[in-house]
Length: 53
Image 1: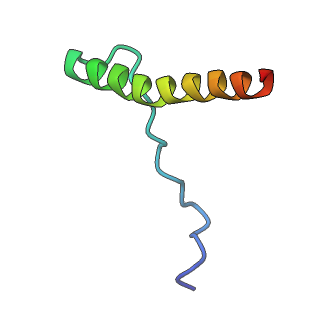
Image 2: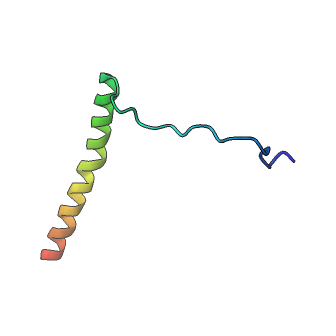
């Protein structure tokens, strides 16, 4: 059957982050982290401020 894996088939390796990425990748990871983190921090501060008054 085409939908069932063969008995000896293995799944491909999952991609993981490199422990020491090259410099351009590191910069992109930092920028991506800031893009995700700053709005989250702003949202938490806004929620706290809204509950205080």
